[in-house]
Image (cartoon, rainbow, N blue to C red; front, side):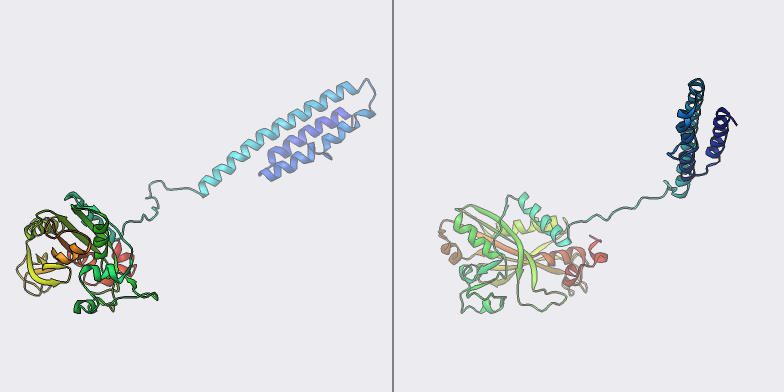
Length: 342
């Protein structure tokens, strides 16, 4: 068999083996078999040096034609196999675009934070600003400056969590913020003080050793008890609904005089009387009163020139009343089944 016949045979064999390849791996094996370093066509090309000068041009031309043809056939077959492989992959990994997508859970503000923000928005709308202070306080700001000396009976009602340093404790209310602001600010003063507070309470449906308060303070010339009542009526109607009624009952707080407990008409029975309001038609929401002159004098204000009122509310209580939650502990158990409702 002449070398030209051998090249023609290689051409036919290569073409058949390439088209018979059913995978990219088999196609690569065929390429190596004919065009690799030890391939059939490579072996013929290496033998060109043994030919006579007259035979060499014709054989070299034929060999190059065979090599180019085999390379073109390999390229064509590779594209076919790649297309087939892609088609199988799409069939195996088919995606039904009509199905709803998988949504990642999106976080939201805790209900207590929502209520604080809502209270804050109401009072900012009334011209108040937000003030904050330390949660770790001294006895002076937490008690003494608020007209509650060490021998005052009301002080034992706020027995709290003390640190190892004498006279330093976790604040029992956010009222110390009011004193700190008045010490640094001349009247008029209109602030609210939202934040955490702490008391040595055993957790139960209505008590928690850690809770949240929003306290408010207004000090200016000619502030009256009527201003306090009007302010709290606006707050109650915006928080609980325009049809809510408000009443004030006499009470006692060391740092206000006169003092009052503030109630709203029951949101469950609309004031008619039910189990939630114990049949009286009213629900207590906060405490308030006119700032005691001793507190004003203690921060350098003249009680003859200015007067003021203060109020304080438990955020958890507001949330419980507004959303009819019957256990304060639900706010802090981190049960998403409960929290995701709000």
